Amino acid sequence: MGDPAGIGAEIIVKAFADDELNNICRPVIIGDAAYLERTANECGIKIDFIELQKADQIPETHSSPLIYNLDNLDRDFPIGKESAVGGKASAEYIETAVKLWKQKDLDAITTAPINKKALSMGGYEFPGHTEFLASLTDTKDFAMSFFAEDLCVVLLSIHLSLQKAIESVKRDKLVELIRFIDRELSGLLKKEVKIAVSGLNPHASEGGMFGDEEALEIEPAVEECREKFDIDVSGPFSADTVFLRGFEGEFDAVVACYHDQATIAVKCLSFGASVNVTLGLPLIRTSVDHGTAYDIAGKNAADCSSLKAAVKLAAKLARIHNTP
Image (cartoon, rainbow, N blue to C red):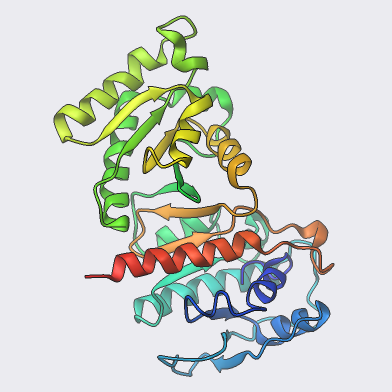
């Protein structure tokens, strides 16, 4: 359910208000039942939830969405701001999801947004879902990716200043990431993948006219991966076209050299419907591409499009991954 002070509960009840998601998966909503039901009433939404308590067994089949009720929120819980109660509750939803996955009760996990400060106030020192899930599953190597329909973008660096992001474009780091993508995405999609690498500078430096990172770092990394590891990777390509080429299906994944190079492309091509996928985890995890939106929490103004897309992709990847 994510941070209960944000829009997580609202986008959940809106997403499951029709049968579209129920027809492609058997949803188990991990959260606080009373809060979800109150949110549905406030939004004027009627959903026939099936409520389970923590000790209950999750049934193999069910006709309506299940709420796996942790009952961890007070009725006067504050909406629209960080709190220790909200941070602790959101952490407990994550921990429970991983526990149920380990018990083979779940095939995949989709997460609503959480808040770093609230998480810290609740006693959990993780920057976000990715690091938290990595800790819970003993995962050392992982990467952030975004899926926007047929475009998959994987980030070389995440939350760094632009100066530090440029400094991190190094041959060894690129080789490591390309090999990681080839291994993880091939396993996830169950096929050999074709990877493109974006250039860092305008026009991928135009033969050295606008910088030398392409010649010194990116091109040698691509060549090493092709020749030494037999990976289908090419580039560097100009960033102003390579993401569109990926969106049109020419590549299975595009490596972005820094955070906004990836997210600007993804959100321009598929805003509201793009999905965050963590590569490297032993479980399938998708997430919305937005934050908690405290400013509109409790106002029946949230758009559930990204959550619906995240659930659909999780179900699709689970089917692919679980097919012999």
